[in-house]
Image 1 (spheres, rainbow, N blue to C red):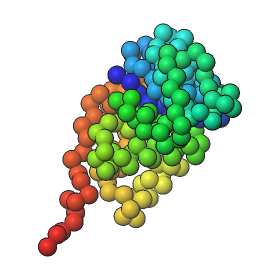
Image 2: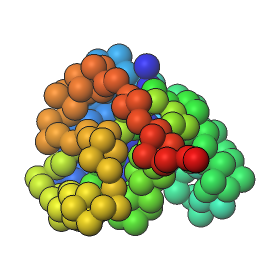
Image 3: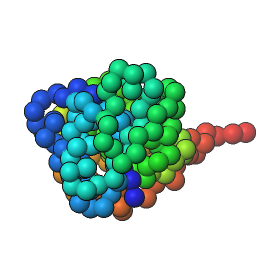
Length: 191
């Protein structure tokens, strides 16, 4: 079992770094491997260091240009170097059984929204979640609920995004996750 963790190359607040380190440790202690963006900086580095310190397996996937900027983590179980961000995200998804986003910036959100969209389209049946550290995602969750209210996001798709402020509860929900059987054709009346 491997969980792909989306998090930042920046550190954010001290609490975000601590939370990333705790997530890495907790995943390792549960025997769950980590797949992530391969960086040694920010919350990415803290996540990897936490998992490695607890004896966990950590696979990093990083584009070549970021290796050349010297931000690649040098002590991972495995580091896969790819040619582009698109290839990075596809490989991270392929290597993972579930996805969780920690507090991060635009890149973190972009990765989260892409795998969540893929789930909505039926391209994968893997759980997707947010670990809401100290209410970090509160505004985003209000926006997502607004998307539902305005008719741009179907309620079952909203429910596909699992949200919790406790990693162990979130992982338990991942274990029990059953993908929603809705397809985009269900609401299309064809002659």
